[in-house]
Image (cartoon, rainbow, N blue to C red; front, side, top):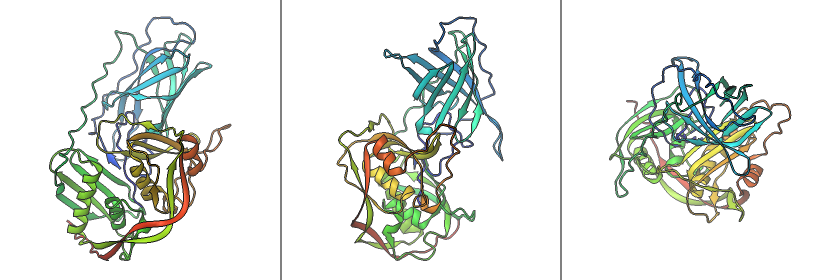
Length: 412
């Protein structure tokens, strides 16, 4: 099953902790590990009880694992109080040079400060010291790591670097292709695609099948691919390719390149057909809770991640057609037809409890729930309650890819 990889600006996100089950789209260039830096000493200042406004900073230390050495990421969190008395927090992972990430569910109660970053499946909880100048806390993102923070002063505050400029888009009239593409068998035994990403001009697929590539290239669900060879979803490949011409492709340009790759290297021949089959229809309530995206990149980003009460789906810079395509390729067991009539690009986050009909029958394990935490609803109720989108099951006519011929690519 296709799993598109998300690489939205992800501060605090590191491969060791991200528990995403799959991933599409743009990735920022990896930053080298920062040197270990301790939290700044607590300034000799006093603050009114309960006042946590200001700049807080500390270093997140990710232990060495496998071939990856220890990594250190300095974190800066700017906290302020809103006119209504609630709190706001903006999180910067300055060694990754990520844009500030706006926290949600920001609370300060009983001396404990909390916030979440839904888009990366992360959350922080820290206990304020008696003098109000430091916090002892934990960053959670598929696992828990200590993150102690100190209140910064003008003299001790770390500089927040300007985020990198958005990548230059590929020309709209370009005839995109892969300048070079290497395809190798993947014999890891993993049953689903682990990665499909674009980073600048570098396109990567890890453990993808012919079915995965067709599903992505033609925006269909696996059940919409018929008459395929017996190895359609069994044989798996790693692909490394470089795009041509320069510039970040949009989603249609990226699909065009994969279509050319399928025709050239897999000798894929097929025709389009129509068939009636069980599908999900995506509609929207008038009072939907979609947030217009502020992204400056041309690609969407999607990711799955653990939440405190289940599993999370985060989408950034997505159209409703794009969301429907992602749901059918990475999550659901049948096609999804977009009938929302909503234009534009949006950000959304949904927490849900997966079941055996999803993730190609291999749903991820939901984290153990803490005492007093209710499990998230199923995907359908979660989408409706949290975002205002509805998935309804019905039989409808859908496009199918009827394969006439396909060859296994030669290794190189």
